[in-house]
Image 1 (tube, rainbow, N blue to C red):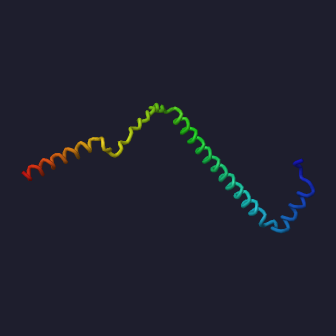
Image 2 (image 1 turned 180 degrees about the vertical axis):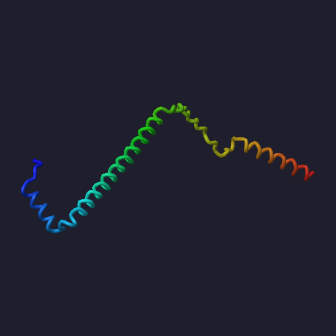
Amino acid sequence: MFGISGEHILVLLVILLIFGPKRLPDLGHSIGRTLKNFKDGMSSHHDAQDKIAERERLEAKAAAASPVAPVTPVTPVAATPVSTAPTAEGPATDAAQATAQALGQANSDNKS
């Protein structure tokens, strides 16, 4: 399964013919450096994700552990009836009658 087959040997020969024996070590070095940088990048990405997950876990734990103040139910205020405009039988008519009487007395005093 992981043995060297005829196709692998053919690919290695083509690479040797294209790059030549002098440039082959440099090619191997650059491929190795590229793979190392890729692995380092993936490792730092996983570390960053782990830190974010840990921070979220701690925040959730702290939120669950913090005491929550009890909610006091608010009683609705009873609606008071809105007073309507004064009618002829209300206090406004009493004031109007008193004013009319006062004017009537003043008029009768002026005539005499």
